[in-house]
Amino acid sequence: MRILMTGASGFIGRHLCPVLAAGGHEVIAWVQTSPLDRLHGVQQVARSLMEVKGEVDAVVNLAGASIAGGRWTVKRKAVLLESRIDTTRRLIDWMDAVAPPRVLVSSSAVGWYGDHADRWITEEGLSGQGFSAELCQRWEQVALEARTLGTRVALVRTGVVLGADGGALASMLPAFRFGLGGPLGGGAQYFPWIHVEDIVGIYRWLIESSGLEGPFNAAAPNPVTQAQFAWTLGQVLGRPAIMNLPAWMLRILLGEMSELLLTSSRMMPDRLLKTGFHFRHPEVRPALKALLRNGRTAD
Picture 1 (spheres, one colour):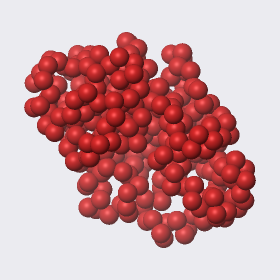
Picture 2 (picture 1 turned 180 degrees about the horizontal axis):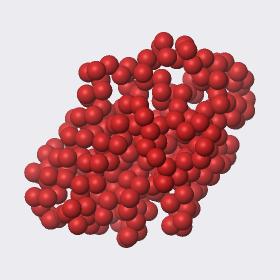
Picture 3 (picture 1 turned 135 degrees about the vertical axis):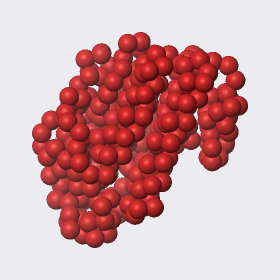
Picture 4 (picture 1 turned 60 degrees about the horizontal axis):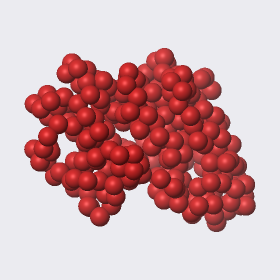
């Protein structure tokens, strides 16, 4: 298949491109500002959609400014919205102008659900409140417009992706290695994690499996609380993990963005499991051991 991808130089994209290429697919990266030397597994780079020649079979939409890249000021919120919604709309306008692809697999996030305390969340759950929920809801609404073109649309509601070479885990490791790690905001909130190899596998599964559409929760089938995750990471590293940043301090330090750390999301990948998708890393302790043993994530 010829696959057009946005966000190819991001954390997930860097792992996904070589896997798709190894599977016999031709990957075309629509790159607007990212450095080209990070695009391993990409056969063609397009600075503009007008440079994409010929039909594509699938579109993978990973574009979006980092939601944890700074306090959610009015200006920052506008950047987060524009980088997702405008890019997705430009993709759909381009798809409408050329031969529409068979499938669009578009990124979303667990933030769609908001805070559900300790209640289990499946794809049947209601949407939540707050900026991250609004962002995901609007993002998905635009992506779903591709269905009017006859394109199958799959939405990936991603949890916290763990990898030793980037993402949330890499930012946590320095503090934990110095014995300064621990749960955030008390630690009772659920932490919907997923190994980077599994998120890559999910994208490939949704691209290659005809008939799969709609929302899919992308998190390991065994979610843990913040406290359980911190304790496990400390155990794997052989370090204490007892430092706790209380919720009030996080709200002072991060403002509205603190909802990313304080929201509880006990998310289950119900629809993926029913399709027969197999998680290579379903349990958090073996997943962390594999990542930290290798020193990097294997593609």
